[in-house]
Amino acid sequence: MKIISIINLKGGVAKTLTADNMAHVLAVYHKKRVLLIDNDKQGNTSKMFGVHSYDDKSISDVLTARRLDIHEAIKKTRFEGIDVLPANMTLIRANLEVMMDSTRPQQTRLRAALDPIAGEYDYCLIDNAPDINISTINALVASDDVIIPIKIDKYAFDGLAELKEQIEDTRDDLNPRLRLAGCLITCFQRTDADKQGEEWLQSQPEYPVFDTHIRYSEKVTESTFAESPIAEYSRRSGAAMDYIAFVREYLERGKK
Image (cartoon, rainbow, N blue to C red):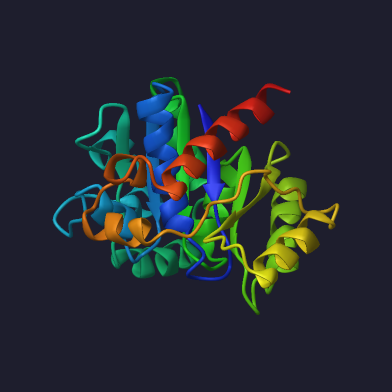
């Protein structure tokens, strides 16, 4: 099972959209078995796939409970091949509880929970909050790859150096297999600002950039209200075609 963290320290850059739509394309178009982990207290991935709840176990329990079987928290979705480990606002408490518990390792709990189910899925995608807290550190420690969605605006590259430093520190100290797979330009419009921002990022050798960018489309916003992945909601929209192309590019890069 390859584990991929989707993360950016900025909000509003399409992290959740990227995680959800990448999972959908992998499952539906490539017939992969996908576990999608919601690692954001907002629970938007959980809401998208209809598994948001305060009555059932969630990632909070995976991080805090002793000897919990992760199967107790994983939920089936209406899509064959996509399961979700949901999140909700209890993740705030869970982060604090993990930090206060010095009786067992704090940074490796998610990895330990995922190890027994590695043979059940081809890919695990983690939708992370725009923050570096103990649950996002757990995600990085468990991951093979990191994908950074970036929306070009005045503050597009704020926090990028700090995030890259966190990735490198995690690789040096806790997870030597972790790599930055690439930055993904999202919400792209053919304006001079977007073109210049993309060109600048491509000129920075320390930040690999995917050739595919995700075009802005009103259909994407509509798809969130419909709680439907964009390739299901509007297959012919530019964003749907771009996410399909992006997943294909990611898989091809993985073969090299």
